Image (cartoon, rainbow, N blue to C red):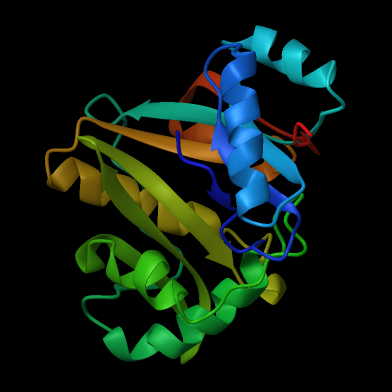
Length: 230
């Protein structure tokens, strides 16, 4: 069981943990681990496949704070994506854009629903940039200005659409769509069979984009916060 401060929200009084089944002993053990970290509460992740966990936590004073739709694209069956409407480069091609990507990340992570208190520090250079394949890390440009970025990540034999960031003044202009189509084209060219993505339920435009591109919903992840056991 991994109980840890919430990445980017380490200042909050919660430690995060996954629960895949109802287990009061495990909940108490997680609570003890949270107290050892100086936290008074837990942020528990579960799914709509385990609603008994939701009921268990609800009875102990927890409430839902975020929900993510997990969707999957059959890359082999997806049509060839349209050419991008913006200039797209990869991080492999333009590593000097790293400072601009970091500046955008610090804004975009906090703009997510339920994540306004997120603080991105220089550790992002590792987990948000260097750990991802640079040839599949796409950056949308308007001249010298970074409009957005999005990368693919490979975890446990599954390829996923990673975090997508779009500059505030570029939102609603199709930047996210251009990046996601480039990701699909790269996946096709490199023999990737499926792509999975996670999007917060309140990001209606991104969910609509996924549907247009052929993604199908698999399940939902539910995030709940509440007090740790005394």
